[in-house]
Image 1 (cartoon, rainbow, N blue to C red):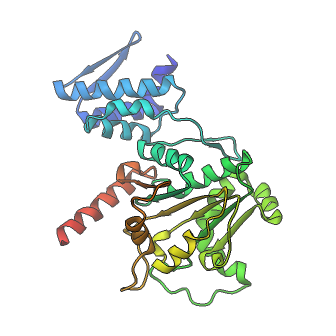
Image 2 (image 1 turned 30 degrees about the vertical axis):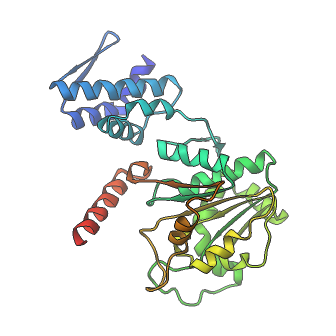
Image 3 (image 1 turned 90 degrees about the horizontal axis):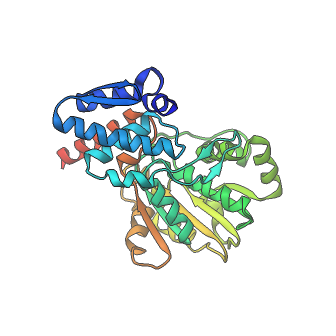
Length: 309
């Protein structure tokens, strides 16, 4: 019975999604599911429901995102990949919530970070690039594999000039680093975060402050890397010290650099393509784990770009 409750979701929202997508009708009676409709729709709905039940058996909580992702895998004929989805928990947040990869792309990204010294994660907004990188950093820090977490991003405005910001240096750079703070607060809680910052175990700084440093025993994350110049990217990559890991994240469709300036992220993806111990992980719109509309927005912009070409 609890499997049926988990599968159907509150107000049968999960089953309604499947019914609307495949134009079928699903009825639950006496511990059995009856699916009626045309042959192809029924076959696909069966595959999705079987996949969702296997996730429930592994202790996964179903959500709108799980159901839509399972349907997209079935539509692509990749339903066997769903077995990989009930992934291990990477990290527990300060509120006791487990952080797990929700898509095949996210699972591959976490494996790349674990197995390589430098990982480059590229993909659209909402694919969990920064959040999962911070989760992996906190896990490595808690396991004492590294002594500190260093988070950095270039201080570039997204298409609007903000002018002079009031306050001291920290106040001026804080707005640029807010997404990194959000992820860290979520994992550690504000109190623990402040304690580690005071001790110097966690550092959040703009990219310009990395010059001249060697970062040993550190987990270093460069966020919004598409807004670095080629020189900045080379400078950042050469900060790598012993027993350190680097994760570089960015979205090459959202470059805010002045026209004529080449993106350091695009450049390093090309230059470092065949270098050992450097992994490149690319996400697509299917890996988006934000609101359903974010996927549709990304697809619409991609279509528009192709049409303009």
